Image (cartoon, rainbow, N blue to C red; front, side):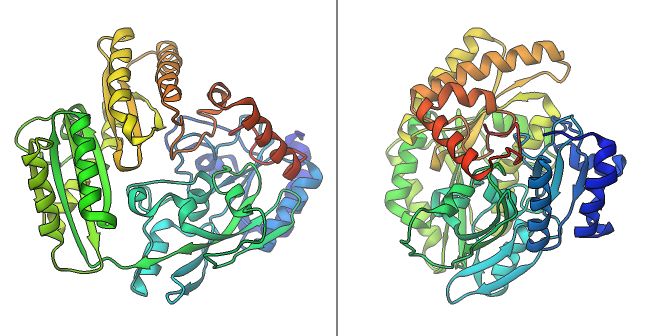
Length: 475
């Protein structure tokens, strides 16, 4: 499968240049560095080159060449992933296929509530294009200014609005995909109903570039919300938060778009490391929630949220709460929630767990996981936060910045198995929204049944018989 670097430079790279032109090929080591390393600086690879096709036809020609020569391909969008899924290995034999020049929004159809965008379009640009026609694209991530639609689809990205609108999979109607042998599957159908066989679209969404290259997608749009209101809530237990979530759903219905959870330790960490962040509540609480409602009708939204919180306080679910009625107040709430990732980077080395569980099992899991971690690591700093409304927690353990690499590696192995075993007991998932990539690839074998793994391998072999698509990731 591999080829020597001299051979690639003399033949393969020349043929690539003929396809994409000089501006579409990066082979200089210094220029490739940003592509060869993930943004977390955790995975470092060495590609043979970075190819930047400017059209689906060019992608097809590149893939046809790689299929013939059996050159491995790592597809890369904004390179903002959390699991090393878009980083090449260190062999120097893998080609990075960057979608950075596939930046065209092909169609916006407000009547059909759809937008067709190429894989390299930034998520923020899709949001802006929707807003220009008074529509709303609800996928919202901290990296939306740099992540791409293709990457969102490859990992089935989640974010803060899954509770109301679903994951990326739920927001996609159709795809255009270049297969490993260079054939183009045009599945760009803007249909809500299409009962004509296997749902091939869903096969490629979440496949992390192991089955083909997504080059474009038809995405769902929604009516533009005209009213928003948010609240910051303090509770004494996960059970109380769960009761508040249930009450909010019953009272507010689809107006409930976000229900984010942070522990007191998470809030304290943010206050220490994020400039201008302010505590929304005067007193400490074991658990905090950021609750947001949105509606296409302006009147009555604040009263609905305030009434829900009053009922929750009367029932003993909520200890304290403050409501953000204007943009500045809501943004201050979200600055706290969105500051957690940066705060962790500044404070230490995080052992991260991106897990999903049935919502009803969250309180028991948190109690068991806290106790299990403290038993083996009494001084552990547990940073637990996440999208409680859809059952996705980021149950992290923060190690000191000066932790030696051998000690860190041992702690990662020990805590991963401990936490993931508890997730498995609750019939949960060890990868909720960040993808498997390199990070969880080996652990997946411990938690996927042999039947599931066998089916996945059969699909991979059928679509990619030369095994050139993103080798070493997911499977």
